Amino acid sequence: MGTEVAITLLLGLLDRAAAYGALISQAKSEGRDITDAELDELAGEDDQARKDLEAAIAKRKAGG
Image (tube, rainbow, N blue to C red):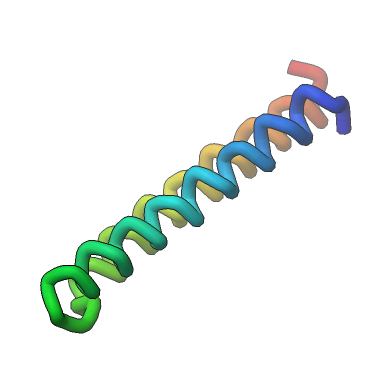
């Protein structure tokens, strides 16, 4: 794995962590718990990001 790829992955992880942090912060400021729907939405985004990453890895392994 090249340095550029590693940095890109790390920045992506930090971005996802920030999204969860923002959700927690918003819910806390509104005096409520995070809803299942909110968590499902973020999880769906995470699932899509994982699929995109797996596709990019497969393409790179195939020489593309």
